[in-house]
Length: 305
Image (cartoon, rainbow, N blue to C red; front, top):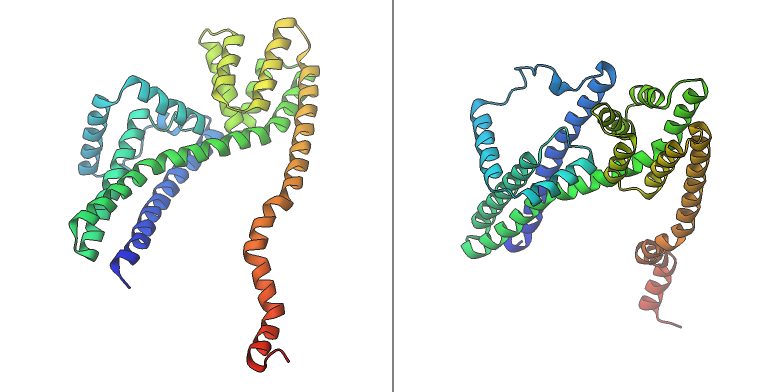
């Protein structure tokens, strides 16, 4: 087979394999840190790091130089945009905007260099190899952004799933006589997750001097979910008007569950339409071949009559 045909498959497999390895390690690190915060109550970065996991001095030096180079040329608007994406994906405390941008640059350079080397050795032509290397570099540069956007969507869905149980537990504590802030804090430490992380940030902002309204407004901006934002708005209004938070939370959780049931019904009604395309494209042709195949072969061999 021609190298021009086989190389795109090899290059794509190489890029996606490297991305899978990187993101698997990245996700593993996040899972370990979440477990540490759940059981110990502090972040791993607040503890003295182990020397066993320290990178080699050469890699550490290259990493520091790359961070310094990226920090020198990244603009403030670009940095705010990356910080917003990291915050929405839940990686704000794990990576800075400069580190993420340098990771993108490194992934682009490695992917582009690998594409040029592989294609030039396979095809023996430099100009097509440079073009393929450019395409691979763009893909390698954009892959971390695609991953963060996917993680952001997953995080929002997880927050929406956690909302009813979270607010039900807060409501039970409030009815038992616990204050609203103390109830939220207790539930956050007993039910670790993205929703608990967001409310812990709210409590920390209030301790630093922000008013409850400002802290909850910041919470609304951090979570791009309409249902969650409506819940936060109702909590702000209840606090300002002096309405009992217990009744508000009870009504909110009932409304959230009703919205989830309506969403499930809507998805169930959309299922036949979504199944139509794969059925027409894959299932029906195979079914027709099984049913009409022998008849068509018999007509082709023996004739119609």
